[in-house]
Image (tube, rainbow, N blue to C red; front, side, top):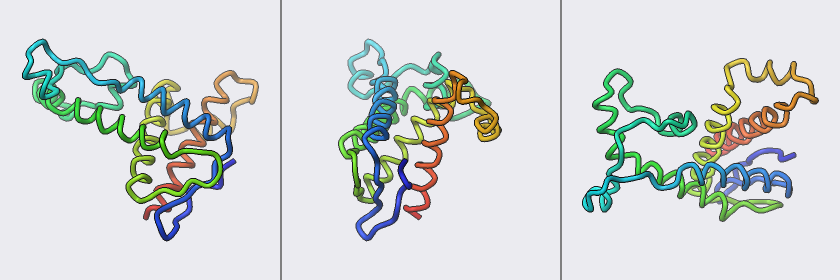
Length: 174
């Protein structure tokens, strides 16, 4: 298993084995599929500007990845979503692409910009997986008490590993 990210003179580095790379590629690719470009209206100007729907996504993962900007004002939240979600989706896809282009077995050296993209991409995967697993604050206690025979065990251990990667990356960057 990876020993996490380390700070280096040119950014940060991490050593990953082939299994870890395969897992990251799979998970990031799944999130990439989720954050495909959002639908726009029929109006050509709306399509050109990426103005989308004001509706909160029905998929709970997408609702978590693109939360309402105004919790107490549905109209303002909808307007904000219409004008920003396309750009946010573009950013998430760019971050995922950066990770997918730079990940490989062995030592991976990342610039500061690449490391920030990895941080955001790993965070998106954790958020998505956390929603699907219904993760709570007690996740570590739940994993500790979970039998390895529990069918949820691999997913929870993966979530924990992603948390570890994210933590070491934050520490290496700052």
